[in-house]
Image (cartoon, rainbow over all chains, first blue to last red):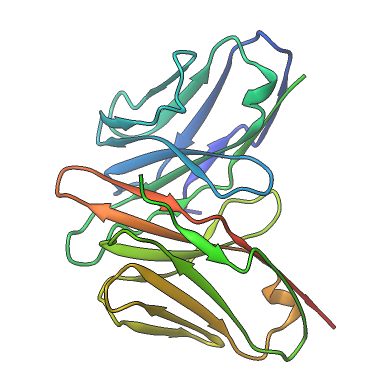
Length: 116
Length: 113
């Protein structure tokens, strides 16, 4: 399977603990995105990388959230001191941006976080 | 921030019926994508439309991008239970240096026998 893969798929953690999610994008894709989705809502943009550079961060990404893509390949999303409001599905996506054909983004299966 | 509104939010129909889902915005998009999402899974890409007025067909699904690239529609002919899911439109603004996808509110479709 050469799609976007995320790990772990499910995580239950106690409030106040730190959690880290990993994303492996499609190999030739230069852009990597993180989104968050809660029940009944569409995905909300968190941040994205062009190669290893983090180009944009949403206001949703508080100081407790940090994302990295150190070598321009896989990425990690860390949440420190988790709160119950952080419970959501965290989606990773990647794309190979092309001006004339659009920026088609492919999603992974998501990482479910439950903070208890 | 671009706001994409989808309508209807919920749709329950019987097998064999036709339906149309609308995606509207006041913003212009470089491209627009439609996804289908099942519970507990990530969104799966259905189509990307880039040119204003473009129409794409995917079996029983027909996608149209508005002439002004501000709106789109998804038409399903002869719906089947397998079409059940959350349909999401997402618009992309590409400035040459920055790009992100903004999602609509979603349309939850249920097709019953």
